[in-house]
Image (cartoon, rainbow, N blue to C red; front, side, top):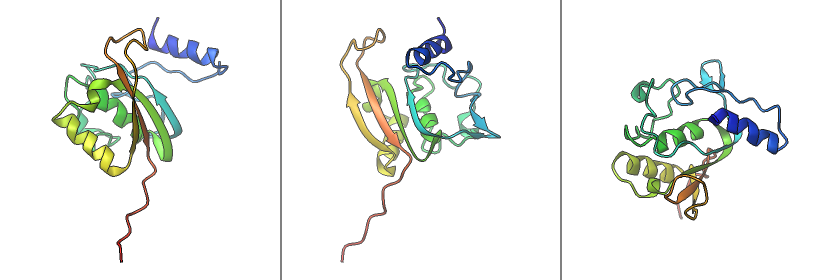
Length: 160
């Protein structure tokens, strides 16, 4: 069964049979757009493919028309942050998102460490929940849930 088929089945099971499910490459050719911009949502919940090694196929991250990689370009062989950055860019200014990612996103260094630091410092990353191994049929490694929001925290006040 395809990912789109599973999504349709999930929507039917959750009493939302008219959900608009479209097949395609989420990163290279997003289907949900308003004109030439990504459509934005109040809530986004996602379970993207873990450590997608082909995430940049058909995409030039440095020239991304949707500005999803302003905090850095994920490694070529680890697409986890590419999907998370896409989700954040797809949130309305006060939108909230949740994303299931592999546990490695919490610890890997280099480009991912830079992106992770930027997300925390910006206030977009609100929480991380470590999930137990074998919660899903695949993968074998334990997942982590990332909670994010586009709403920026109030500016820090200078103490008197």
